[in-house]
Image 1 (cartoon, rainbow, N blue to C red):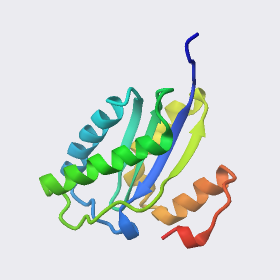
Image 2 (cartoon, helix red, strand yellow):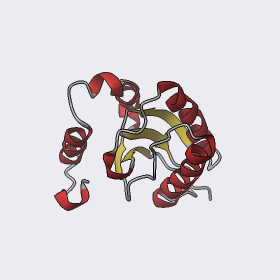
Image 3 (tube, rainbow, N blue to C red):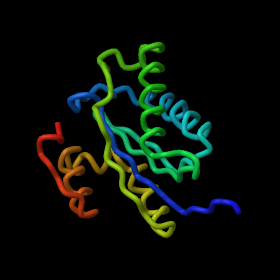
Image 4 (cartoon, rainbow, N blue to C red):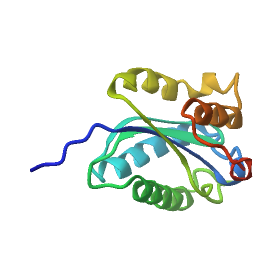
Length: 149
């Protein structure tokens, strides 16, 4: 018997200490493309990826053989190496420890794609920390302020 799943994740993580190191938009676009390849090579479906200066959002459907934590670990390791090799973000030192992940229904995907694609406009009104607290609250995830830095 085959394995069937319908899981959509929005994953959010940031640069170490939430430093605004991703200011170059052209380099972010190059990075989107690379990151999408890393995720697709794990047989996952990428719906959207977008960044602002200090953090990123990935909206994707994982392949049943891939655990969320191993995928995020692989994405962080691969992109860390790529950023340093291509010196596209000179002030980048590393990714933050951990990540936030939220699951959604298939019906939510179009609105989530729009949300992820509109990150720059969105963050003109809300900081990344405010956004994370809001997302955690909407998903009823217990928040420990010690781990928000």
